Amino acid sequence: MLTTQAILDAGLDDWRKLAQALHARFLIDSFADGLRFVEAVGEECAEVRIGDGFVDLQLISKDAVYTDDSGASQVFPGVTERDVELARRISSVARSMGLGADPSAVTQFELALDTADVAAIGPFWAAVLTGSTESLTTDVVDPTGRVPNMWFQGTDAHETPRQRFHVDVWVAHDEAERRIAAGLAAGGRIVYDKEAPSFTVLADPQGNNACICTCLAR
Image 1 (tube, rainbow, N blue to C red):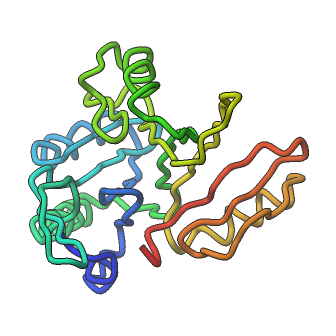
Image 2: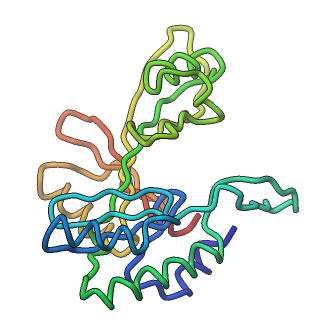
């Protein structure tokens, strides 16, 4: 698994790393253009979506190996050199077809729930979100991509159980300042920024929180 810095150093102008994967949006003039582009590059992508005027692509290696600070390793989905090389090939195909990219538009939405006991509530949320408890590991990840990922944030136990949701909005690292400014201009306020640029917590006028997240400083 590549580090965030290694991915940034790779100079992938069309691509941005969000939570786990590389993401890109290429602009198209028609659905037919999108189909031709997907036929040329889509077979090796983890996820492809054609929308009105764009094709979104996601690259990730399910068999990446993550090594922590202690030297222990485990297989965990992440970006590898294989994905970086594929991203370069896809960008080359896009240029040959006259398609531009809009890296500022890539976004990933996740749900987070505070809990002191994942084992007690995790199976329920896996079942209602995806229809199966098998989608629960440490997080709930829908293999079909129908619903956002849901992860559980550890908290202290409480006598009276509480439910506290917040949303994580992953954006390109060079888009975060604009997204935060847009939230502030729309009536929000910053409630926590000590770990920026990794994440900045904003609250709406009623105190509901959203984290603007980037791949930096992780």
